[in-house]
Length: 165
Image 1 (cartoon, rainbow, N blue to C red):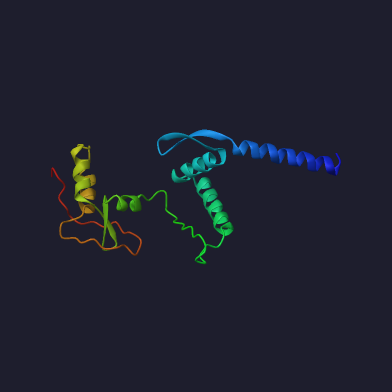
Image 2: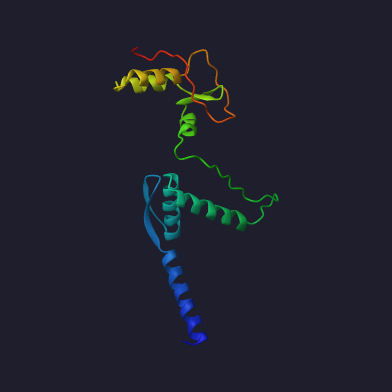
């Protein structure tokens, strides 16, 4: 194949790819079905996998975010777009529970909010005595005050009476 034929074939492939990527597809966004470009649907799907904890998807999203930040033009104020990264251990749900108010940081430890314990206990779970002690020791006591956690959490033991004990 001649060089000219290879260039022509390459431009055909590029043109075909551009047509496919510009197509609109139906996607569910925030619970609503709508038509979006294929590229947007792919990015949404990748982001959903990343949010679900898929490590490869997380790495790919961060790589794309870095590329977008590097390619973003300087803004009028002279500032670049900053994309903040937070690396969260997918096995540790404490930050999410803190945001929801289910756990409360106290003295470098997380304590479970009493209302959350009461709600869980209202479901009448089958718990061993050891489980009850663990929950009791992990529940926020009325005299404990919220304090920010600056070090890794040490799940200690303190006595708190559970509802129904």
